[in-house]
Length: 144
Image (cartoon, rainbow, N blue to C red; front, side, top):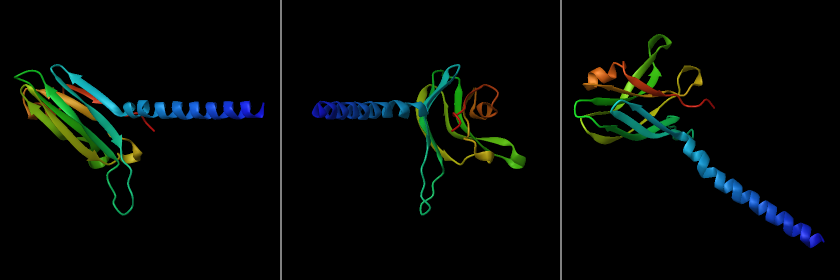
């Protein structure tokens, strides 16, 4: 009887390990984002980075692909950062005009108060008009 209980315990423990191992990749998919505004779209990953004191790195990394499906449209991908007097400013790190795709990547620090910066996709008939931010879709990361 003892050996049956021992075998059952081992099987249950191994099943728990298998379930835990299978749950890992699903959690890793939670860092993705998809943005779309008209004929412009962007998708990618929003990652929290680990750092060591000897080699500090910014805690946020955003990377992905920007796609424009119209010949007369431009798209920009921007990330929020701390501006003057505690305001939020937007920094462009990906841009494309006309049909096509391009990859983007950037790093960023946390905002005042420890908040994770938002990422937005904006469209316009030129890069300058898209950067004005009048026609945008915004990704807000889930708070920790």
